[in-house]
Length: 235
Image (cartoon, rainbow, N blue to C red):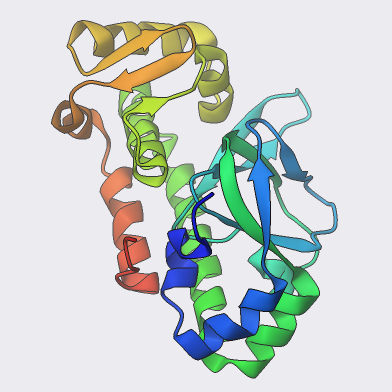
């Protein structure tokens, strides 16, 4: 299992601040599709992913869901609980399984009170996630091909892998569109040599081609992370 510095947010902390957290960090395996918390539920744990990716999704009364934000090795899930935001406004679901560490919300809160640097970082991170959610709302106006390309690029950045374990059903749910729409777009991208799709796995065959297909939201979200969080270490 990777060292906890595989999480770029933890890696960005000064040694003294990291020492405040280390006694409270517990390794965890995050299997794909595991639900970490539900909308309206209490959040008692913060998750710092290593190679896992967590989607924050909004569920509708019809049973459909749409992703608001995606968090992975460059962030933390549930940090708002340490800032007195104990009630979740969305569902947290693991979209790519992997490992990470957890920290009880109370312990994270105590550490943030002792460290202005940590407290500020958590606030800026929550701002970044909020900005990502706002961008996702705007992204609804873009073509499905552009939205899918943007989503795959973000997932690739966080997983650091060109092979992503996604079914078309899952992609349709996350994007809030029909499966047939995803099938048509995936086929188009495959015909263009941008991706290869088989047996619930998507292989990004042409990264530059995928970037050309993506809407502006991909680069906008990347800039949000650079602006609000700074250049986090890429360890």
